[in-house]
Length: 177
Ligand SMILES: [Zn+2]
Ligand SMILES: [Zn+2]
Image 1 (cartoon, rainbow, N blue to C red):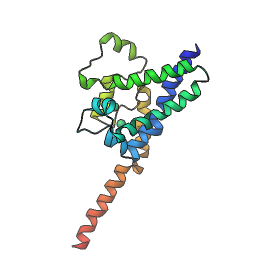
Image 2: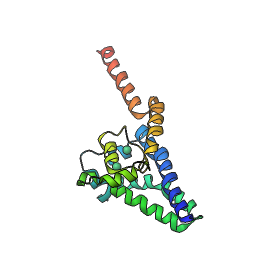
Image 3: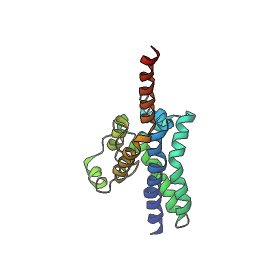
C-alpha cells in the first residue's frame, strides 16, 4: 500500500509543483520553455524526447526537478513507489508526445483514463497547438487553476510588458518627428 501511496504522491504532488513552480512561471515571465518546448520550427516529439540540445535538456530537467524533490521525500514512505512514480512520469512524457507520430488513444483506454483526469497525448497536443490551454502535464485538474493564475498575473507577464513598451516606442515616434 505504501508503494501506491508514494507513487501517487510523486505524480500528483510532482505535477502540482512542476505546473505551478515551473510551467506557469515560464509561460508568464520567461523564455526558456517557450523557446524550447514550444519551438514550432521542429517536431515536438523530436525536442521533447530525442533532442540533446543543452537548452532543451535544461527545460526538461527544470520541469522534472519538482518530481525529483517530491520523490526524495516520498522515498521515506516507499523508495520502490517513489522510483516507480518517476518511471511512470518519464513514460508519460514520452507517451504524451506521440500524437505527432500518429498515436490515437484507443477508446477503451480513453474510457479508463478520462475519469482519472489523466492527460492523454491528444490533450497535450492541444497545449502544443495553443500554449494558452491544457496545463498540467499528467493531470488535467491542474489546467483550470493554472489558467486562472495566468490570467490573474497577466498584467505582470512578459507579453504585457513587451506590448506596453512597444506602445511607448510607437508613441515616441511622432514626438521625435
Ligand atoms: Zn509537450
Ligand atoms: Zn508549455
